[in-house]
Image (cartoon, rainbow, N blue to C red):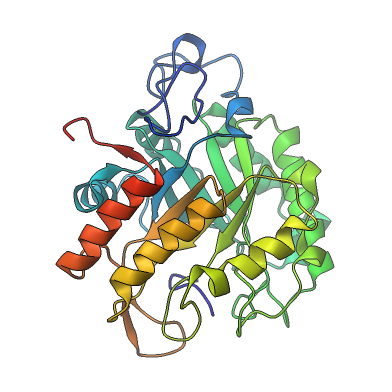
Length: 332
């Protein structure tokens, strides 16, 4: 089933440490807290983030990096500060250097979901948009901080213009590798590459291995899945089969790049199940979709927000802390 969007803190080595501030404070050459007053000689070194320890907590929506209310609201409701702020970017748009620096300066790793909705994977692979990709890469390289980048997420979802029925797995792999190589060739070495399929369920039956670009082209594996009215009653059925399939061909840390629990009489129990299952699966983090939106393709409203009830919010606070996702606020 499609996801419902569509279309501390920072340390000397920026290492992730379980049970403490998951993203630490950068120093000296990595710029204290994100952006520095003078441009660095080289892009931010993300080597220490490619194989993190600890468990990150993030929040995602379709607002720009400058729209920081989602972070402050999430922090207040969750009782824990997010380590990742995920957002969506359209193909052809410029990179928001200042907005991403703002996020990094305030303790969030920016994560860009790059959506190729106005072009084809085959054109991307042929180099049709290379001039824009190089410009984007230069803008990312000039940003004094790390960026997690996911290109054409949910590539196994037929609801996407780049998914099954619209493009082949070979088209996707060729386009991913081309974008990766052009970005790296333009000097943007501060990118963490995140491959993000949707979980295999009743709406996405395509096998995942043909879509995998290879370990040389991927830093983190991301998985997208929601506890909703059709699929997603438990972690064991929603995520576990997909995680097992991916483990057969990919050797990379796993991040749940989008998830949420829809409002229902089972929401509290499913929040507990999500955090317990994610901790047992040893993922490096999960990113929560904290919005109210109709389920794709229908008028059925789904409320994924933390605070749909006192019980749901309490479950989120207790279970995220128990499982060690994110880090406590300084006042806690």
